[in-house]
Image (cartoon, rainbow, N blue to C red):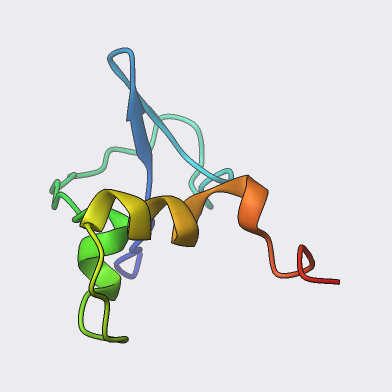
Length: 71
């Protein structure tokens, strides 16, 4: 089997995957955990921002600010 990179969410002691994995039942795997920075840190430097990072994170990530909100 080739390596598979997939992002997951850790919630209440469980890793939640966005989709099923292409593995047969009983397949043994080895897992390496790499934490990802919050969205605002990943996007830092893409635009000049003079406000605080919490406000920018809200603007980027909030469902209230979807791409169709300005229409």
